Amino acid sequence: MTSALSPDATTAVQNTAGPRRLTLDTDVDICVVGAGLAGLTAALELARKGMDVVVLEREHVGWNASGHPLGTVMPGYGLPVGDIMSRVGFDTTRELWALSRRGAAYVRHTAEQLGPDLALSDGALEVSNVDIGDQLIGRLQMLGEDFGTDVEGWQIERVRDVLKTRRYFHAVHYPTAFQIDGSRYLHGLAVLAKAAGVRIFEQTPVVSIDAGGIRKRIVTPAARLRASHIVLAGNVHLGSPSRRLTDTLLPVWRYAAVSEPLGERLAEVIAFQGSVMDTDGIDHFRIVQGDRLMWSSPETTWSGNPQRFRRTIQRRIRTIFPALGRVPLAETWSGVIGQTVHGMPQIGQLRRGLWVASGFGRQGLNTTALAGQLIADGILLRDDRWRLFAPFELVWAGGRVGRVAGQVVVGWTRGRAATAGVLARWRERAAARERAREARLAAANRQVEIR
Image 1: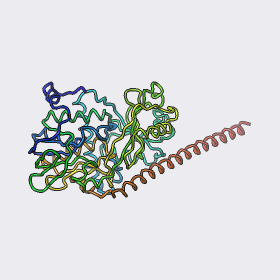
Image 2: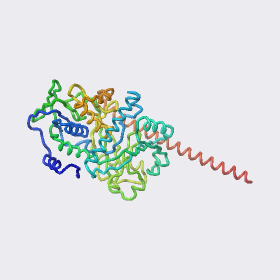
Image 3: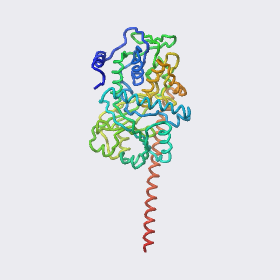
């Protein structure tokens, strides 16, 4: 990977590359648990400000969902803005939205530091599978005027001009949203963190945590560690060391694939170069490497073999874009995310010196960045903006019963979206038939008048 680091920094990183386990007892300022996007961002920002930081990772950097994001970066959260507003009010929602924009700006700046290999492209479309013309103006006004977001409303004709499908109607276009190579971004964060002095120990699971007292204690299989602050950024994989936190997360496995090269036929069907996602959160796709299609769609609340979902993804692509036919897939993969009951990320201080950056399922890269920034600012500057997330407290996810219920909700959401889409398309065809009938009647009346 090409990096914008100086030669000296690059050499330093190369000298520390490769799996490295914690084997000696260590004292540090900060211990970050989890080498994902949020954990590495927090570690990087803390180290840049002079802190001695260690990151503990049970597997290796980029082994799970953080290492395989689709790479779409845009403002906002997994929870619709209207739902956030109904819970915390307009002013707090506006502050939260501003933080999400700050997170997106951080990702763009960091990606630019890492060089051109991250393949930035601009634009994102949030498309609807129903006719939302009446709602579009109000939403655009709120996002644009109230929350300072660069947005455009696309009418049906414009959407279908770039996406050759009758499944989609109106869309909200985010022209300043962008896409990056998510895996390279994550590993780039690790490069920058190591260059800043962060020590990353892989294959080092945390056995137990004692967060009492001024100096916290962390036990690993081969060594003990003491720190003034602990940042829990391990999501659903924290397990017994922080069962209270793990139990608030519903594990969701998201499956994705990238196609074989499709040549010119892909451009004929999909002429939009940015990311596309539907308002129901079912499909998320974009063109990569010029003529390949990357697609994410199925979800389960249990771990499944990604190969079993190849045909599911192929069927979904063919359903949305019949003109593509059966798309050959080059690779499929999955990653488990932690989804909160309330749909917002968990960011802040659980108790003095114990911080959490968690619950990023459906949230996007911008929220992992803002979490790292908020925690670093909270520790070093006593900046308390993390308290904006306090209303979204730790809520038990229901254990195994919650996972079953979660899968039912996934199925219900997809079924409801499918039904709504069928009805919307039926109404559209019915309206077209009515217009054609009226046109025929008008033509007939003109003929009568002429005679």
